[in-house]
Length: 288
Image (cartoon, rainbow, N blue to C red; front, side, top):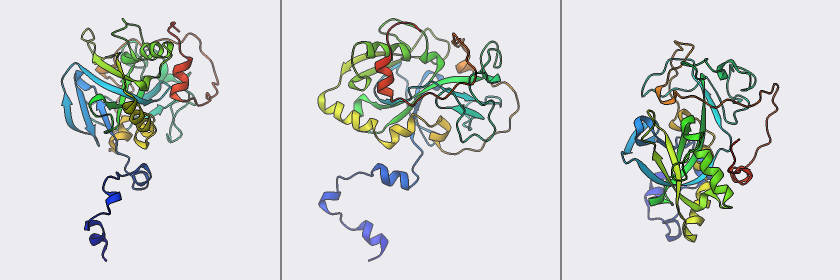
């Protein structure tokens, strides 16, 4: 029997409902994930760097199934070109040390890096940007695709009303109520008062038992685990890198005042790895 005949013949009954598993996906090198972009204040569904759909509603309901507990960093030395997807020159998943794959780092640690100084970017901004990566599924299709959602600093830090919270405040609020973030449908909504794309968050409802079981399974999937550690460029797939033309990268969507650390420590040792849920449980509603 030829290979083609094997896969074209009728499947055994027990295989008809079996989907491609994470092992096969990983061995097959299927690393181009789906993500939600908020470019231009519009929810855009991206696959391999191509926009396949968009939702122009101001709000979208999702379930957060996984997330990077650390605020990541990302630096580009070249000038920003709208719509272009290229790999960053330097990045960090934990905000402490550059990723081990980077050939030429800007500094040994993020703390004390010249790109992490106010004024290294446009105006008073930092050239190296804050980001936080989440893995989400749509409320309307909890058992469907996992999407990467990368939050810019405007959507991470600050304070708002309980129906209009930046992400860290929202996560602290959920944790302070003794609940897990993956048990909730979360509304993410564009802030109409912001000049650049900025999301706010609020809880909508608790998941039903069956929905929660699916959400937990999705959170442990290869897609979710990859989404919270890959840069958007890695998620989209490899792209050719542009030549650096400027020491400062100007990105209008990120031109905001970023928080200043209270203390500066040298020779920072990498923190012990913590699970996303563990970090949420340690958070309180107090300002840091």
